[in-house]
Length: 233
Image 1 (tube, helix red, strand yellow):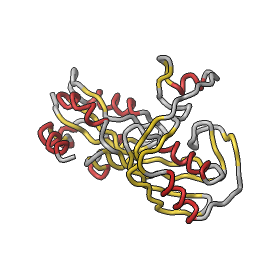
Image 2 (spheres, helix red, strand yellow):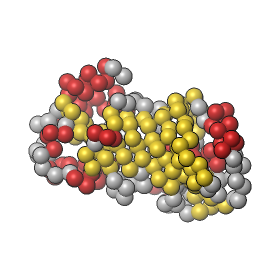
Image 3 (cartoon, one colour):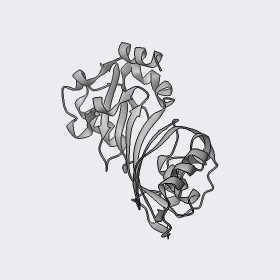
């Protein structure tokens, strides 16, 4: 049995569990397996797969800060706050780059409060919010405090914007883009989302979920190295 962490670059269009399912087919039967942080099918990027004794580190892994690169578009909002949803509102107001930087500095850094999106895995009375949303039920989700360490504008040419965000676990990046639009007097929707880092674990060292096959052992970070990395966090 393997004890350690496997870095997977999850492709768009599959769930985190789809990637786990592919791994189960090539790992030894009975191998203990878990993952450190779900990615929506809409999102791509780093998925930490915990194997054997590393599954005991799940809580520690979940608490690590995360880095994302997100591409958004101004001018419309959707019910899912990303491009997969139904368009709800439109607006033609064009924010300036100075307006965006000012709002980010004033309202989107440090400890902030955000309301999780209806189409999320947030539990409400034992059911996931997105399950209730798909049944047409309206649920009021409570605001949650998250921490935004960095919010960098990488590119902006209306209506498209690209940002790099470093944030605490549990932050909804598509909600940040949605709320940014609202704060600027318009709307904004996430079009692409990619997780690039979880703590010191980087996407550059990850194996594509398309390449999951026998012989994965050489890609595993052994448990001793994992503990060493976590001690330096």
